[in-house]
Structures are given as structure tokens and as C-alpha cells.
Length: 427
RNA sequence: GCGGCCGUAGCUCAGCCUGGUAGAGCACCCGGUUGUGGUCCGGGAUGUCGCGGGUUCAAGUCCCGUCGGUCGCCCCA
Image (cartoon, rainbow, N blue to C red; front, side, top):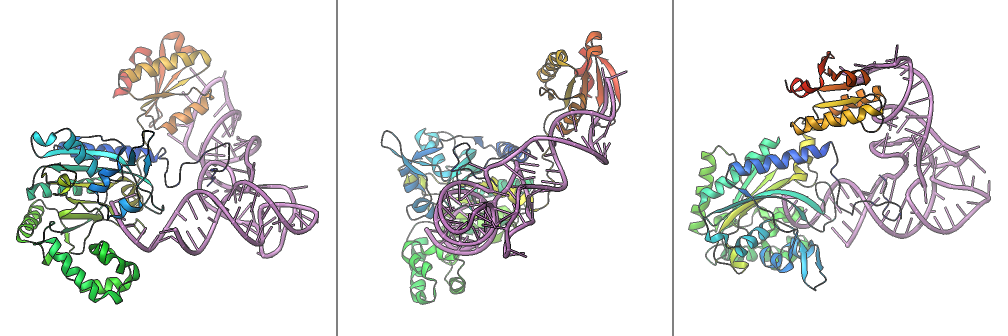
């Protein structure tokens, strides 16, 4: 692959970014539309937030202890000296927008959906780039466990509709209170201290900073120790347990299969209670195509009122990657061109452009050759374009006000009046 | 931030070990048909062999550096 970063004549895309080119770009567009349409059918309206925010939003929202904030943010100072950061995740910006515009004073829950790029400064590898596209939805302003179920069912259905068979992992991580998660963290820290000498050194450091994350470790020694670690699910408060049971039974009602995963921990600090993650194969070292959870304390962390909510984010890049692995036929090559207008001779080109334009104005996909190809070349290009019909305009046809209409599937050809072409190709 | 592998035509890659004038397939364009595609046949264009330095009469090939890609660790969608 030519890389010309140090060549003065050409450029390459920045490290960790990529271009999405035809024909693959069709699949991306289709998936994004499918997501936003499905979310809309469930009452989630589109929202668009800025590509960058005040750095402080993520520090306070996502959490200073999280890896995303400490190591992975694209932070820069603008000309006014403000510290800004390219959006690394979608939920904090949405909550900020809700609070800024007082949407929480309207009907609740606020239900919004997005399809936007996220930026994280990481070492690229399979399924991980520095800019990736996520589709997601947020339901803000309700504690009802049925909202959890609604959100989870929606994300689950989208992944399946996209063509994957995900495993849904479900857990509750309780809420921030001595009677619940904080109490548990003391128990867990105690346990980790006791076994500190058996942990991998990197995990030993996390006892102080973020003990929950030791459950994520892939170090064999740590994993073995964690087999016997006390589980959060055994220590959450009654209210959280009840909430979780409601979510689980509602999901069962809806026919959504899930797997309880008491060790599931997610990387963003704002999560409370319900957390979930979707896993599929074929992603290399990565295995999650998406996830989400409740963030009942996020609004208050940002200085707003108590405003519980839940949402999810799904990585389009990983979904596309996993799809390629299923061997799912990529019928993504077909564009929207239905008619290809073949022009014979320079003067005919003008008539061909006119006809193609008329067809487009009538809502019919049409293309033509403006590169000066031979007739054979144009017919080949017509075939390549995926068009069903070829309309041939030569001197004879123009003189008579007709066109030769060829069905590219059956190879049948007939002559029709020029004005009747749109009607003829509609059938 | 750390480690493995890889940079040769638009794409996939051979050539590198054993230094001697740059190759294949696919794709693209033209022709085989006074105006007819998807098959077939013939022809054609295309490369600072990632970049910089070193060794040598001679470097795509050997050595050093560098940039990039890729996969993994960490973490996450």
C-alpha cells in the first residue's frame, strides 16, 4: 500500500483513519439509514451535536479515571485559548445538549438518536481506528426499567436486522452509594489487597485507581484470581436488584435472549445499574460491536438536576467488519442507476444529457457517458452500472424523435418515442 | 506507550536467500462488428520497487535509520 506521507506530491489519510469508498460505502449508508429509521419508529428523534466540546465536559462526564479521558482524547487549544476535545463518545454531549436547552422541562423521557463519528487517540488495530462511526440512542429522564428493556430490545433488533447474531451480555453495577456499589468496592479492594501478590503488576496498580476494571483483565494470573472475587451482583442494594430483575423479565417478555454476566464492566465511569454489551466473532482482538447502560448520575455530574437515563452506542465499523466475516453476500454493489443513456456522436451527447436529466427529474435513476467512450465502451459501462435499461440515441433516433430501448437483462430491444421513455422504463 | 509481521503497477502479489537494464493475474482503455453490454480473442497505457543514508563497478535485492500499514498487548464501539 503506497504511503506517501513524506512525499511532497501526494497525501495519505492520517494514521488510524480511513476512506470509505464505493462499493463498500453503499453498505455504510444503508446501515446508517436502517438504524436511524428503526430508531425513529421507536420514537427516537435525530439529534446532531458538535464534533468537539469543552474538554471539561468529558472530564466530568466520562470520568477522570477512565482510560478514554486520561489517554485517548484528541484535545487541543483553539485560538481563543479554550481547551476543546473531539467527541470520544456520544452520551455526554447529548446530555449536555439536553441540559443546555432545557429539554428536561418538556415531556419525558427525551428520546434522541444519532449517527456520528467518535475520535479516540489509540494505536490502530483490527476493528479499532482513531475515528469511528457510532449509531446510538438515548432515553433521558426516566428510571423505569421498561425503558431499559425498550432501549436494549431496539439495539438488539438493529444488530440482528443488520445481519449479525450477537450475544447480549447483561449486568447491573448498582449505584453510587455506600449501601450499594461503594460498599462493594471496599469489599473488592480488600479482596484484591489480600491477593495482590498473585495479580499481574498492571492490575495491582488498579486496586487504587479503578478496582472494577480488574474484571476486564486478560492476564491469566489475574483472571484466575478473579474467579473467586466477590461479585457486585451479590452486593447491590435491594432497589437496584429489583430494578435489574424487572429489566431481565421484561426482556424475556419481549423475546430478547441474554446472558447474565456478573463480571461485565464497562469503561465509562458514568454507568450505573443496567449495563450491557453485544459480542460477535470475527473482530480480531476486539469482540464488542456495541454496548450501553444507565447513567443515572451523569446529569448531576455535569451540574444539572437529577435526570436518570439510559442509552447505547454501536460501532458501525465493527458491524461492517463482522458482516464481512459472516460471508454475507455483499449485494452492496447496486447503485440507484436504472437507465443508462448511450449517445452516438458528439451532438447526441447533448440530447443524452437532456434525456438523463428528464429521467432524474421524474425520479428515475439515470446515468450516461461523458468520457467519450465508443459505443461498445458505453454498453459495457451501462452493464457495469447495474442499469436495467440502455437507451440508445444516434443520429437516426434524434432525427425521428425516437430512442432505441434495450432491456439489458433479456437483451430485447425496441424503438419508442423519446417522450415515452420515462413511462417505458418504469414498468 | 510496548512487541511481531509487511511496504514492488489502480488492486492482489511474484522477484529479494545466491546484487547485473521491472514482472504476473485482475481491473482499465482500444480493436476484432457502418451503431449494441455481461463470454471469447488480440493489442495498449501504467511504476522515483515507501522515504533517507551506507556498502558495491553495479542495489527492488545486502546493512542502518525513518515513515507508514497491519496484527497483538493495554483499552474500547
